[in-house]
Image (tube, rainbow, N blue to C red):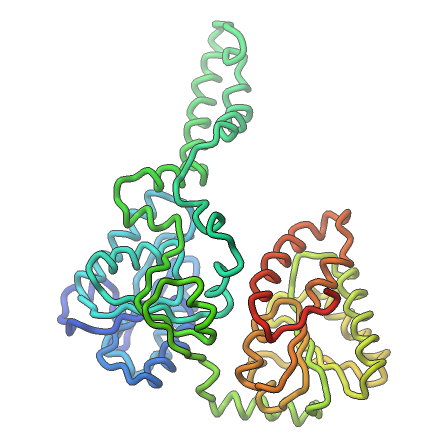
Length: 434
């Protein structure tokens, strides 16, 4: 349960009873990174009269509690808005609840400007409601997801716009339900078959109604345009704040695109932490940083491919390679594999064992000569914190070398292709093996 006890913090029901100064700047977030991002934006552009909306679900009370405990005095009010579980899934009934909640927020707060970190699904519904009320809409970049649409064709972007029911879906569900009763296939009139038919008909109807494709069909054919907005990305912002405005100009129809990067504002704690890591490991500007990531691919294949890459790099350089492991999802066997590389490298491969630090700050403070990764966002943002750095991606090498006959690689290869396509928009990244 969420414990709200700060003077400026409210639930939506509580804020309804209080006065909120109209014409505010309304910021909508869902995680701690976004909080830090928008607070930095507020300070840089000197926004006043700011209200914060924190959306969350009962699946995770920890994150909104952290936001509650850490939000700054930049906000005059902070409203915690509980949404149904899985708010981005196709669920018509839940979407109606979300729509009503967002309408209540706008009617109560009466903002002049709304700042969103996302432009899809339930955030698109929020944006659609606001647009019809002539509220100015601002897009605030949140990582590479902001540029995802730049890797898609216009047809791919619009594919979800109209929900359609596929007849094959009905056939598939009926095979698992109705066709289990003989009466469905032949006209036997015995009581048992009638009972089975009734039971399986109910299951069929339930499964068909709750299936995501059916829910998408209901949303897409509902007369309320604000609900339909859930199906397509919202592109009609008035302003955007992004690190690469020349890219967002090609995606969003905003009238004004401004440069903004959260990495501009340096945090003294992060600087100190980064310097401690640099000094402890002896990282120099002649070294290379490798950013490991977790994909659903065969661990041993991944390690073998990466080790070959490392061997080639070390043979042509006198520097060292520092490995930054994925902070949360690194597999045990991958970690042990990198440990093995470290032991047999004679000190030229080293694993950074600490976590919780900004890798971008390590790049900035060390001025390391190059950073290598798969599809990490740090490859893109490294040029902002260190203009002379060279960023390399090994995505193409992995896509070429991974065994496509190995079923353990199927999902990972598909995801890797999608993420690599986003990175190809950025000229500062060199794809090795292309």
